Length: 72
Image (tube, rainbow, N blue to C red; front, side, top):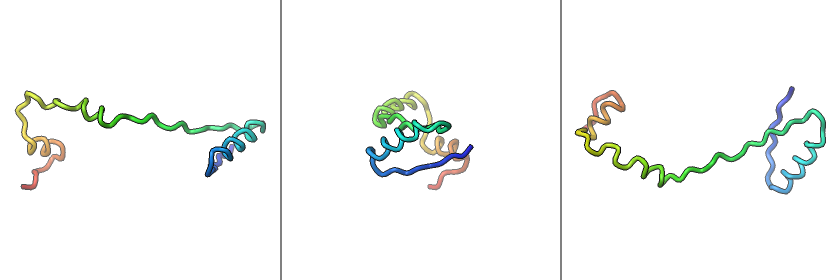
């Protein structure tokens, strides 16, 4: 079994090549589907308030995250 990677510049040519390859026995086409995009603003808003009501400083968070003393 061999794997080939083909780069095609335009959609029309891609469709032609895919149709042609579908007609050949023994050829399997694995098209990569684009990953779903995530709303970054909504993702950031999900994190708002996660430290509310906690007695923790930025220096303590950095120390725990990086396991070293923060530069001051």
